[in-house]
Amino acid sequence: MQIFKSADLLIPRPELLKNWAVIACDQFTSQPEYWKAVAEQVGGDPSAYKVVFPEAELGTDDDARIASINQNMESYLGSDIFRKYNNSYVYVERTLLNGVVRRGIVGVIDLEAYDYTPDSDALIRATEKTVPERIPPRVKIRRNAPMELSHVLLLCDDPECRLVSRFSASERLYDFDLMQGGGHISGWLLNGDAAAEFERGLAEYYAAADRKYKELGISPIYFAVGDGNHSLATAKTIWEDLKSARPELAGTDHPARYAMVELENLHDEAQQFEPIHRVVTGVDTGALLKALEGVSSPDGHPVVWHTAGQSGTVTPDRKLGELPVAVLQNFLDAYGKGSIDYIHGDDVAVRLAQQPDTIAFLLPNIDKNSLFKGIAKDGVLPRKTFSMGHAQEKRYYLECRRITEQRTTR
Image 1: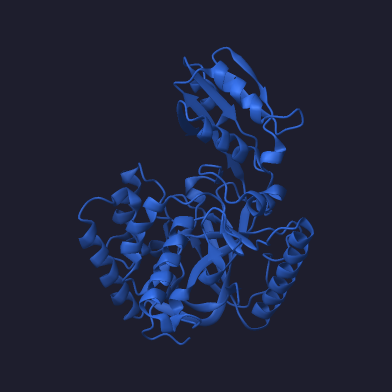
Image 2: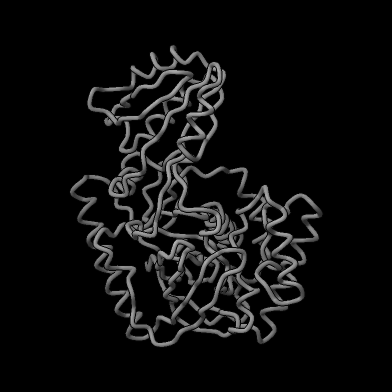
């Protein structure tokens, strides 16, 4: 099984890219003006905007929009807007607005090696819990789609930064400014000798992970989904449904067995993980803190709390979880009192905590060295565990690939 592999990729011609690439569909969901500006900029040009469904626009004649998406895909595939690169990867450099460069490799993962369920021991796992209710609408969009675009960011755990690094790839495929404040992106073709070099690095990475987790006595994890897990879960659902309907496809290289992702390194300096704090309202804060003592220990994870005029530190027991957010969230879920809000920013959380019957827990930054181990030992993390950068820094749809049997060369 090739866990992460090359694919037959489709990339729009250079002159189309400025209006082609749009940000992930699950961004700016409360800002329809953002997507209105995208639509106005795109106009009549071919664009990813016309083959994805922004969540901000869900709810208005969805069936007609989905039919239009599929029609546009077929039209694009039958035109000459794409250049095709068989059996290739793309090496990506994304320059963020702060000038930092984030590096990645675009390829596909084998969905047989991926599982998003909480207690999975698959080689590719989700970082956070998947919300089942968010999958069916995406399935409806993808089920009859002849091609895929992807905003999935897949993370590897490579502290020495060897796997996803600068490559001496020969052909630059694109180099342009992304719309609506997305920064700059450049991409190079990675095939032939350069691809072989990367794949040797993959083999070494897998072997090192096997050794590490064998020493820990737990099942290995190679990759974790940092962003776009619900889209990946949708691809998994479609593939499992297809195998159920056509059992002869099991074990084959059908294109729907794979899903396109961008592989990035968890330890890349450009990967800024911001904690998401918990603010509990409508609760007896003293009773809650007293109950929390039952899952704490003197050398536990330090978590600062704030109420109206008071603050302190609780220490959830490290034996209950590798990461403090998991221990705290599990406690709050079991406690079952009050209402939990998920808040970005220390100042906002502390200000909200000044209200009556309210307490804020300020979670520390995610320890990158503990993230994969935490998922491997404790299962996927609670929802709203961390945020990977700001909205404008999410992945833009750019590369494409066929996911139907028609005109495939696999």
